[in-house]
Length: 212
Length: 212
DNA sequence: ATACTTATTATACGATCTTATAATTTCCCT
DNA sequence: AGGGAAATTATAAGATCGTATAATAAGTAT
Image 1 (cartoon, helix red, strand yellow):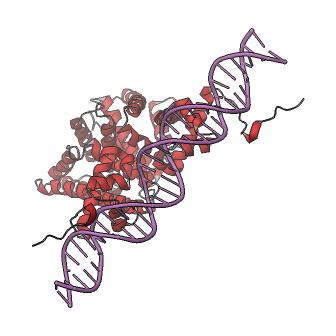
Image 2: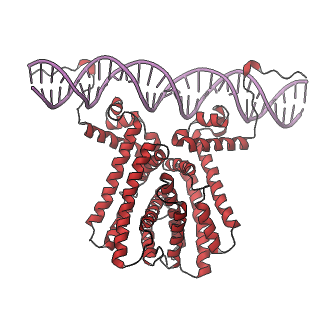
Image 3: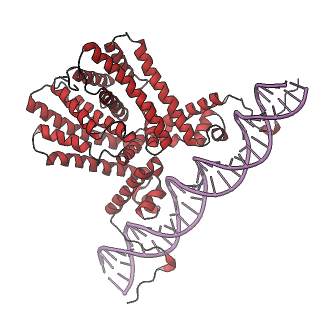
């Protein structure tokens, strides 16, 4: 009957599995980075955002870099899944699938200053941390491979030639990333629909044999 | 004859004009950012790099953000000047001038992880600081305008059509930036010469009317 | 129920950060 | 040669940061 009495006002808490807690902390880290950029990467801020004390981060991740790398991984995987889902939901023709990929790339889910803000922080870390660089390389190659598949299917269906499809996918990725970056840094410079049109123009150049 | 005696070991120093000192501090800031990324943005580190005491930064710039914005400006202007000089030194045909622009864009002066590292830091600040955003907008429009001129001259000389040359320049800029980003984050993904080829392929698509 | 594992809190320590203020040196000007 | 403006050093104050350590609560198995 008698509830166990908590000594001296120490905070009560809910115990969670390591995986759940790690994910909560990773998502809290992402929210902090969205809000404050590099300045948001701090044990104290992230712990406060997650509603826990600082020690938990040390306990689950050791050092904070490990938490940030983990946040990078879950964010990256989530975005790629969203992209692939949009492609899977499209009509199963190479043209429609590529269109779907372009459309979702310019949708508010990805074409968003907050999302870019997170990536900019990650890029900064990738340049100075082998751990982050390893994550980035894996995720980049997954992304390029997805585009490679889309472009290859289109070329096969329409019968035009591509000299080096891997390089082609790299170029298309670069175009998407570059437009994303430019628009997020300065949304007045062009409209998302115009960005989509520029991507379609790029594909049109591909069709016309500019990369054969 | 008697040298003026310095009291109690206080450091001697050389007095400089405000412009010179500001530039020295700006360049020291750039070196710190190259070396340590966001972590290099610190009054203490920059002052040490410049060989002065911290107070000088406060004296000349007020708050550190102002110094970083100034560093952004001098770096941005320097790079654009280098690009324009390469164009000016090329043979005066639209084709050669555009080629020169592409070549210098992929030269070690720009295709460099340290240079990208500085820009990544700037981008992060642009997303959270109106002051930095204002600088970025001005510099981006100068950059796009330069490309717009190159592409317009080529179209006029060769007689192909471009529906919206401003958007075209934005796309080409995005491609360049995207390739720059991808290579610096992961230099193994492609070779600079391959990047140059991809840019030429993009121009070939333009020639073939993909943007008409 | 009771013991045990460990997730979590609480707290402390040393380093580094930004900014403010006062003292001092340098150099130009007359 | 000497006075004065301002460039520069020196120092301090308070905030925040990362990490380590010990104490405690929560849930699980016995």
